Length: 424
Image 1 (cartoon, rainbow, N blue to C red):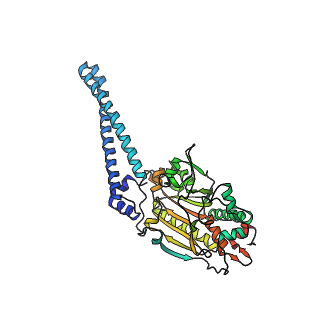
Image 2: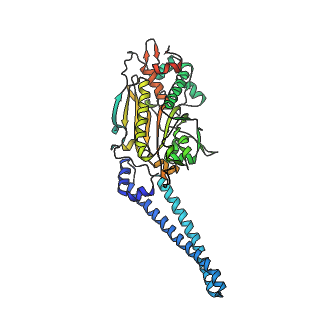
Image 3: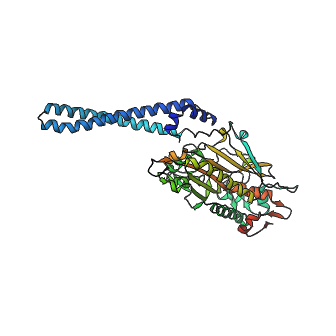
């Protein structure tokens, strides 16, 4: 969440940033934050003043009694009692104001960087780069859901029987391809210096609030109500929360973690052709990159993550493009975000496979994730994350873009992981 210092020292800039994200009532909300914060501070000052007076009077009462000044001592006692009674009300008022302030801050998204373009939605995103290999498919090219059925790779109907729509069953070479991609992505991450983490796929509410999924995306998360736990929408949540309430040494930064997990998203309201086959699932596999860094180094970290994801798509020989997201299409928590999309020749459309984001201090402030440089006071870290990569649409693109009359060819980089060169 935004810090009070950000809001009070750069009020106009914060409001402009929130308007770029199309946050409703930005001016009124920020004004309310400042009002509640002033109330909290004034109450705290009054409480501190009263406590100081209580301490001072308490010290003098004994001395007054020794000097035989009983009436003055009794007057001091009465005043102490009055102050203590008043302090109860002040303490309650301060707690209420602090709670109201925290709840207000939770509703405010991150402020985008200046280089984030103006825009309302996906149509306003800026194409930064197009790369990869061009694909020439047979005239009778099939979409991945038909290829999956033809080669008995993925059974969507069986998933419906077992669980419901959006939970496919991978079979035979389809399962092997899935596992090959997971291992390939993890190996590439380790080669780039990331330490692998195997986190839980269920988290508590504090973890959801820490990375900003709560309260923003509560309706999109699977909630285990009896235990008040949530199935993770991405490994970003448990891995980043490793550093909640932690003070790191500057020498530890940047921290680089990677994790493979299953991910769960309700995708409420999704329908139509965009959810056909593997395009949009409720459960899917993903390898995630997470970095914790110093503010002055986080932009370099972000670029290194972008280079890593681009390198994966090049090794998979897929046509891709990189988008700089506009303010209206960015996530609640991101300050800067780039999306990677692969082109599906059979579907004639681009499929998002990764988002690589810099959150500045937004998540770190929620997490209380800080670092200390020498003897200096602690400072908030910057957090970053990116998919490297989300598997369903990568699988879809691989099947569709590599289909031939003889079968589906496997990219050279994946052959050692699959154990076969073609699906036939």
